Length: 198
Image 1 (cartoon, helix red, strand yellow):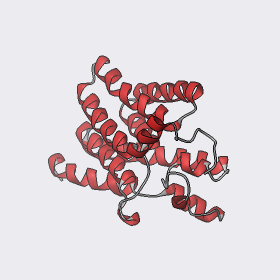
Image 2 (cartoon, one colour):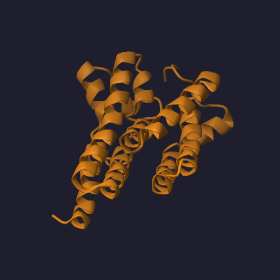
Image 3 (cartoon, helix red, strand yellow):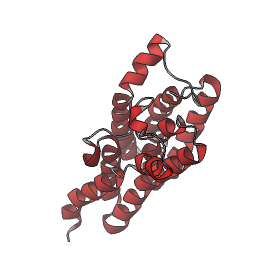
């Protein structure tokens, strides 16, 4: 198969991997309530944490990140960096809009990290450090994600990675869209802090 013909396949592979709802699967296996009925209704790690099960939240974070990394690594190995970036975009969109859950998924933070880990690991480190620093001072998961995702493309641009910076900017715009309700709650002072149960 010509590399150009594999590009849409890479996107589809990424989407299908990204659409696996690990948060929902793990919480159902553990017998907790449906996480879509609590907190933000998201299937991501932060909402899983609201069940009080830290181990489930950690597992969700790891698996959601890995699906982004795996998509990027597989596509990159088969067809190079362009396919890897398309697979990363597909994985991110799959997590936000999974076909299995009527296109209502997570917020994309862990997948963002996983995609960057597979494409350019220093960007993943920068994202995590920014997230942790903001979370430590403000204790808002959503604000931490917004700050980290805003700065990461700038870091990529500064580091001489314009193509990855462009991808990062697209992921950031999608992440901001996924956090639109969180942004409204932050502005009104009603956003839940990290560790609070719904």
